[in-house]
Amino acid sequence: MTASLPAWSSPENLTQMLKADGEVEIDGWSPLMITALTGTAYQGQAIDTAWEISLDAGEAPNGEDLDGYGWEEELGKAVEAANPDLAKRCHWESEMSTFVVWVETEQDCRALAEIIWKAVST
Image 1 (tube, rainbow, N blue to C red):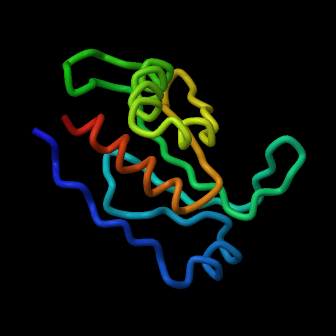
Image 2 (cartoon, rainbow, N blue to C red):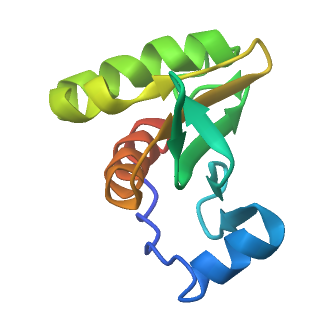
């Protein structure tokens, strides 16, 4: 059974919060951690706001124990199947202990979070 999809809610004063702190966590998506970050560059180009989703390594819904790379493989397949265009815009940066993917827009992050939520909540 899939857990209810959380409502997306980024702070109205996100720009000011990012200027002050450099990062803002979007609440309500546990076990996913969703963070908006400034100060990111990709291939020499500054990114105004990077939207990152991370997940600690651990047990998958099917009982399999996955490290960050295992989650990346499984969730990468889920994103590719659900939205191939979005998959092309994802930046995959997992490590052994943590799954990490980031995108360059809030809209893409929201779509990505919904796909990943469904995949880890079943």
